[in-house]
Amino acid sequence: MFFADGTFLILIPALVLAAYAQFKVRSTFRRFSQVRTAGGRTGAEVAAELLRRRGLRHVKIEPVEGMLADHYDPRTQTLRLSPEVYGSDSIAAVGVAAHECGHALQHHEKYAPLALRTAIVPVASIGSNAAWILFMIGMFTSSRPLMDLGILLFLGYIAFALVTLPVEFDASRRAVAVLQGEGLVMPREADGARAVLNAAALTYVAAAAMAVMQLVRLVLLRNMRDE
Image (cartoon, rainbow, N blue to C red; front, top):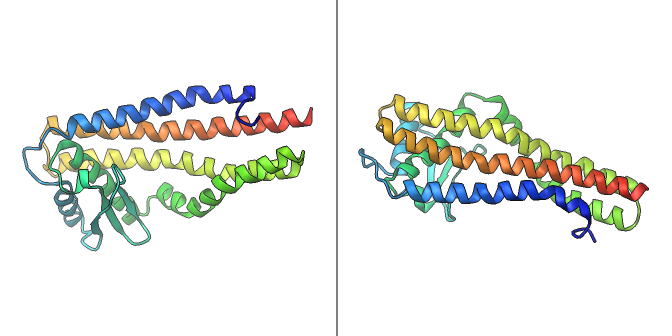
């Protein structure tokens, strides 16, 4: 019933966008992962050089398993790069590595949206899981307070998805700017890195759109129960 009602239709545009975003990021990354940079530095080497030049030698760089599992952990000040990025000298690898360095720079400069996102991670994690459980229990027991509590908790995940957008866009902007400014890539290579990062950014837009549509659906389902 929960997945068969008519409100599920409002998720279709977001699902289509999410599917397209995944296709776009994988195809763009695959394309530029086959183009080597003139400098010949791997993603890990570029990251180390950028961090060194910006006075962030204390930031650790580690390999991590998982395709495009690259991320910066502000709690341990560790930059983790996937195998496709860590040991590759492709335009795609360099772009992604620089993007993660962008997050390290944000952290160092106390970039407010990053600090906010880090602070609400626990709330978002609990909210994204508990919200559905509480809402479904409330729906099947006709308990409006439980449904409202589920919606309230889901707002924490919405906040996380929305604040992620400026964080990721800013990191990508910093990445391309620092690659060009430090002379680590050629202008054409910077364009390729930008294409990879723009494709990756679309996945965050899709995630935010899906979260908002899910919230709209929960509200509609709750109101239908009241009728």
